[in-house]
Length: 70
Image (cartoon, rainbow, N blue to C red):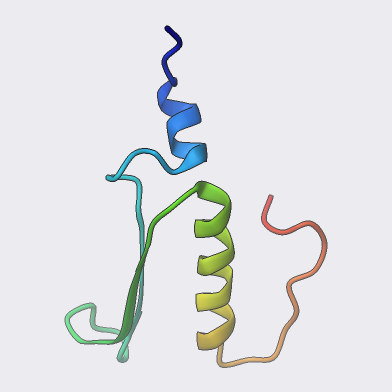
């Protein structure tokens, strides 16, 4: 019987405790936040969701190009 390694379980989204938390805070304090999201699933979906969160909360114009994050 074959078993998934931890790395492959993270890539496939099989581990429930592999999540990414994102938050946008009000001002310089980390006490009050404006928006907070928690992303789960496979690592590729999480990365796309985090990029979308960043794009929604950037106060300056810009463009993320290429093949994504490196």
